[in-house]
Image 1 (cartoon, rainbow over the protein chains, first blue to last red):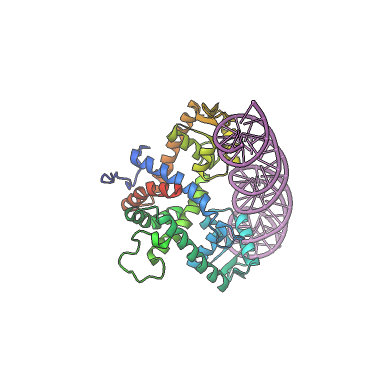
Image 2: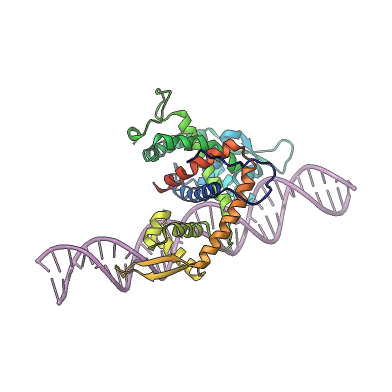
Length: 158
Length: 158
DNA sequence: AAAGGTAATGAGTTATGCTAACAAACATGC
DNA sequence: GCATGTTTGTTAGCATAACTCATTACCTTT
């Protein structure tokens, strides 16, 4: 079923033709992403933290620090939304805002130790949720998800 | 639940609860799903149709017809939300509501030809988007996504 | 020094889900 | 046959979290 592999990575898209297999894949992907995102909303560690706020903390954990504008671009959110999110996180003591060294317009957001602890708890809860979901998949299916996860993350950043 | 897990921990059985690989995978998956869902919102064919409404149309295209309650369960949405969505779709002429044959409480939702045409245009636009995204992935990466897409769809339904 | 561009923010609006309460149609007890 | 409880869909009201537009502060270029 997955033996044939159409060539997607040709540099120039010399036609809007897309193999039907890929059309079905993107169809399934879109539907699954929308429904999964809805369910993920209910899987919060802290009820007072929205999924995007959690995602920002995750990004900060990876990047170390970032300006609000950078965060907005990474999360695909408009700058005003990020302003509110950062303000909320600061009010909860999860991030710290400092002045930018070179540009006083910008600010630098860094996570606090409290955020690190919360992320650890979040990982535990996500793992529990994962274990429950994984019981509905066989090993082969889960292997496919695991292989695709980093690619999906890259996809979300493109 | 953890005991119900299939053999997820292959080579290193000494992990704490969940193998680190899987923890990283679910981490990446969660982040990617949230961000992708946000981007998908901006990839609408018809600006006046929300992602969930599009998803309902897709479900109808697969199932042929369904009652509002069935749709609510499939989309993981509460019945009142589905009522509003169906009403919106009917107002736009994309679905038709008929009386249920056996149970006069229920209604049957079917898509119209107009919806079929819109879905076709939607596929074209999604394919264009896919082609653009695919240019950022190499062939191997895309193959992983394609293999995982059906599994993700199953995951969303569990 | 002035003009224009960029970063962050404030205010107000919109979108989209939820819960609670309700009406109509079915199912089951006597 | 009728009363009682259950299921289905709906209505109303509300909460959240995003958006757009406008404003302020700061940088950059001329």
